[in-house]
Length: 278
Image (cartoon, rainbow, N blue to C red):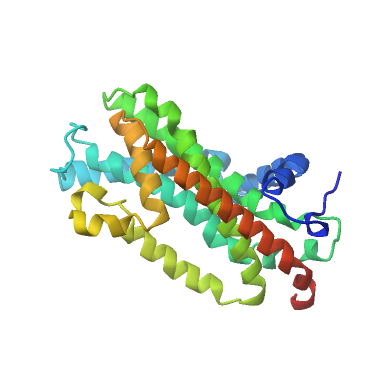
């Protein structure tokens, strides 16, 4: 059944409705998206395992063996691999965000054949990108969990709370993706701008350092970055066995839902002009 959201008033429930009604199409396109990335390569889908495994091995060797980096601000993770683990856990969150946001401005531009098809639900394109990004994030988390066990570090039951931390983050990503996908049709330079923003966020997020390493006067400003809270909370449940900041999760969830709703509303209001521009 084809559903055209642009034909009626957009509500909060429509964020999920377009995914629920088009779930088969989203799954099919997500599977094609993942497979096409490795089509023609010798290892195929194995690259999705090999890449994070090699990156974690490189981080461990460089920072734990060569530079022997130790973090004085963290006492709960007493292991020589601590910096590599913190870095890898932070990069998983950043890569999930970066993969979706960097591709969002060109989603409609790269699928112009769908624009003039009235029956095709363009609003699912960001869901497809997110699905592929989640697949790669899950593989990276699997590699991280295996490494934790191999390194002799026990995992707490709090790791089961990781999805609760990531779900609000996914809504925020979807809202920004819908917004950027629409803007990208009318402003082609947005892709270049987003590339610069993502580079800035890479170094302005607590990826190469924990937030606790910064002075308190600066630390509060760091949390204006939407990645900071998710990175710190994911590390807390995976590496330190701490419970999440439930108040912060609720606030982030509200912000994420409202961002997703606003992004979808903007996308559906502007999609009528896509065909004229393209």
